[in-house]
Length: 112
Length: 111
Image 1 (cartoon, rainbow over the protein chains, first blue to last red):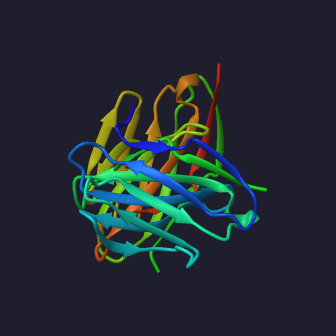
Image 2: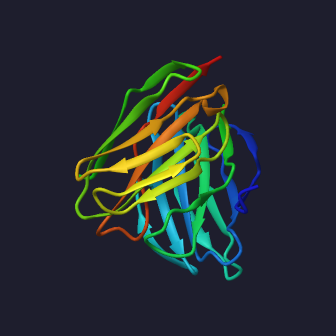
Image 3: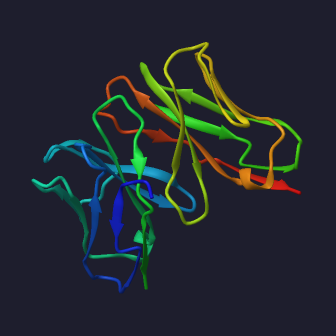
């Protein structure tokens, strides 16, 4: 157990739907990062939050959004889902910048 | 553009056959280079962080080294349990902490 908790582990949904992925960071970690991993693209950075504030954006689609709550857990919202959104979504957390971080076990999203 | 290239894409070794994985990077102001291990269907597991050229770190059968343009992950006398995908990532100087990952090297060690 890495200390980073992601739920659900698996999600199957239809095209056009909206889903929410949840992440609880390691105790004491203020930064949360979201990554998407697909077979052909590898791990792609989506978005980062630090202590409730958005700090950096990567290749995140406009249909996707995220937030970090006062208790530091984070949610990634994916809407108007397409087949191509099927992937593993990972959350990672760290104490701050400039350090390696710890990944959760991921949510496998399948859009049918 | 910051980028990371790993080679080979896949590597098959016999148990005990040592080898190296390569990670070439182009980044504006390297803040850190990271190695992770990923098992199928699981999250990446942190192995090492290297910060400056010439730095080396070891853990069991693994040794990571860093130059100004690339990093190597040396695997000495591998065992079947070392089979996994090894990911290299860099943190750029202007970043807020996010990492840029290579596509990984899938290592298979046969008994």
